Length: 495
Image 1 (cartoon, helix red, strand yellow):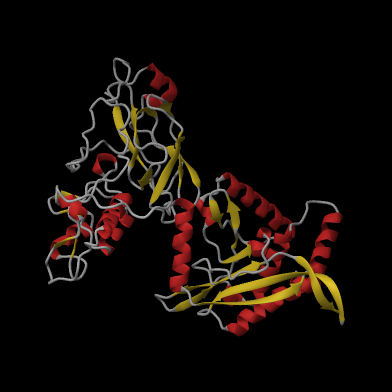
Image 2: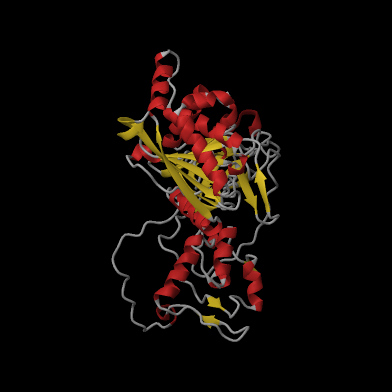
């Protein structure tokens, strides 16, 4: 008798709660080995290949390409172990044939005790747990799954309409406490993502009254958002009432069979805020909400910096990039002004000055704006910085950056001059305390040594968190950067 194990979407780290299926790497009936990548998913951070911790035959897949699944939702099922008769395996997981045995090698006979040798956040390396019987609620609108189906049914194209989301004077009632924790009054609510529970709680939505569109009636974020949009379209959002009074916020068309169909919303194209775009929106919104920022800027004569770079590259060896020189100037400036290489802990009411510089830099890709991070940038020279910038930029364009390469920055350098613009007001990337923006370097009239001349001029902009320092510190940092740009020899003091 083969053991059928369910592999769920693991926690991919960095607080990510969902991922979108980009490409399946296996089909139903394929033999997979332990730690073999089975699906490629896109998170808000990067594209990731997810390995399966079990070896055996794939008996079912859950979700089509393009489907967004929450962490903990089933990805696929794998039948592992060999039957006495060595018969072929079917969709129900009965038996394991020669094809599976050949793919598993020695693990075929010991599948129930074999474990993954690698670690992916969300599951460990121990032996797979024994199969448990689980009782899931069957929402009325959720279609029943055929017992012999080898392919999981596709999710509905549109979420089901809510039955009766409610709101009380405080946004919830006494009997709402269960659904706030993800449980029904008469059983568990099929919802996994804490993001979904929080969204429902903040909007006074009763998860017990929703029908999920995910696998086995799982309630997804799209279901909650659909319910909120439906309520808003009819203007029936709940009004403050007496405590413990439940007021329906369902559109009239959902409860009155003969009510006329509401007119469609005005035309336009709706672009979902998900993936990288959604992560950027959340991060920048948080920055504007939480950080009292200020911006200062200065024009600098970059002629000597450009000449110094030309001389470096003419001497042989790897070419030095302009971004690497600017990064080296930033790390030297942060050593002199450590207040700008810090983070704010509001719970403890402390500014934490960091003893390392993990330098983020903005990179535009086909998937949107990403900010890869150069670890320990303060310990790298211009040549080492150039190589690391090139590696991370290529990975960003290929969509292969890992979450670790996209997080943990302490200061960001944004070279928006590549877009042909002179200046900007950077938005801080929380929890960092500052960002330096660099415009394009162009010939401009400039007074040099008392005479008017044409020089290579650049505008430098610094946005800083006013909680960590005042304008004097920020101005000192920016002036030091400008001095190094105008006279690169100033850097020799810190080399």
